Image (cartoon, rainbow, N blue to C red; front, side, top):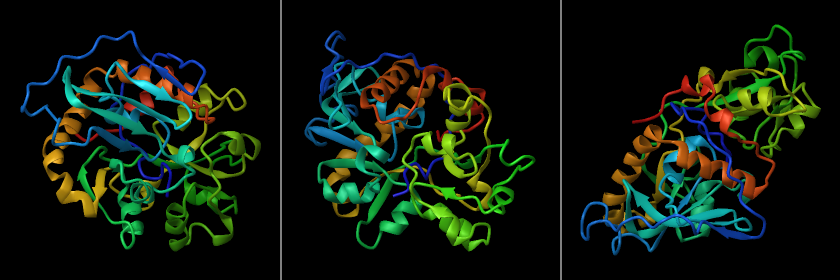
Length: 331
């Protein structure tokens, strides 16, 4: 899997996430919030009887604003499982309870960097997964998936570097020419650059685990990231770094995937079709609703980052970065 190697991108996410840390223990519940009213029986927002009792959504990376449309469906009665790394609550949309629950699971280091298609075929309970189009192609022979809804418009995936170690460099090509290691969490990005003669095979290093430790201790490297996250976080929130990074979008080199479309297993498409006919419009609307009022979801995202304790850094200030607002989200 390319953890987080799919979307570098897109977000008109202009919100400030307010921190609300989850307490200790393996599971905590938000018991203070009032329940949402039930959706009209048989209406377009009533999922009971047509969808699984718990709609399980599998993401491909740590909780972040790019995934807001998933997390915004989690109702105020949610509980957080810090051992399993998941959040579960009533599936609430447009202010009503749809009659089923939703469980959102993060990816990346939380699942040992397994690709989302592999997780979907290992665990039959996963309803929808965020499967980048390059990941879908790579897994198609053994783990075919079918995308049913788009989440992002442009991939925000970047490679970043230290401007002090590589003075004057403005492109990935220039930094790679120094022979520096190219550190990613999957092999698609380096394979693309190797095929173009920009990177040599000896430079490829797929050991990225999602924390800043390697970049801070070895500033010669090129490392994957999202334009909407790492440049701001490293400059403003990683105290061991605290300065700008250089970066370039991989879209400049032909990495023009469909980032994080929601997908189902190909062999479950027909079985899930009645559910998807209602659920997909709900998830499309949740993107719009999230952008209109991101604060509650942002609080949840930051809470989950704090609760999961995987070394991923994410704060409220990062979500209101002007850099983030320069990217566009699918509507």
